[in-house]
Length: 353
Image (cartoon, rainbow, N blue to C red; front, side):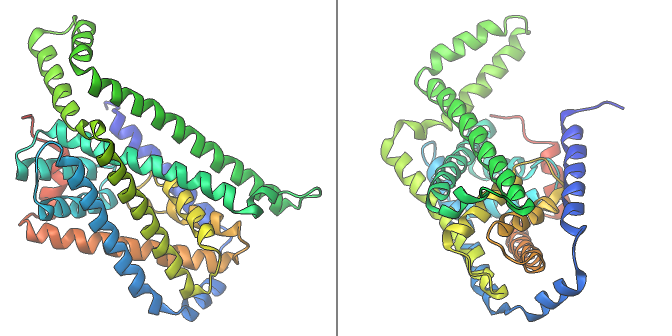
């Protein structure tokens, strides 16, 4: 049996999700959780659902702005590809939804797949940079985070301090990675011809046709980075990115009222940071286990009762999954695609540029 990068990602993802789910459930007091779920005020689910849908609209608007540097595209097509892609991320392994939406938009708008994929990479880079800034601000704005461990710390305070240290390390690693990628993209964009010449020389050992195809793919990819040349466009995209994070946190915050969770808005920002970093790990489809544990551990920093935090994590995950699957299914039906067609897209993406 041949071991591939994809199979390693899938197996490691299942393992990580399994461990996180076990950690989430191992100390669960089922009676208290059932009570918390039964006493919740589900009125707040509706505004949380609406906010989640609005996040998709903003994501589609941002992606349209990125792609418009290459070609003006239909907002409906962008929104459709976004919704279907995010649904695929929740039901397919190895983040296959990014390939799905690349293929869908590329086919509908006649764009090169490498170019479309470059805009998705830029989208993720914007998300990551915004998350780093948000996390840095949170660490500065929440005084209690600096005092997680007192002079005579309790075991709980030691655990909280360790969790915060891991969180800060994760943010630092993400920040360093983003800076390196951004610098590489800027160099590729500003010196694309020279970069292609250097890459062509480095690939001298490959057959001429294959080398030419790789260079063409890279040139198509660079087209998707054109947004870096416009300071005004970068500022607009950054504003949209912060808007997406703000709305995402607002959805978490509103839903918290269902369970009487009244931590500061900045505290819920920390919950968002934790879950966002967690879902970047390899894991099972639907972010099961990893998402739940991240919400639980971040809420524990604010002394939210464990059973309440667990109940909130379950409902929050359900709401997000419901919105993702519902909007994705609607646009899948609108495109006249079946679930089977969507599943096959990552396995056989078009080869044309």
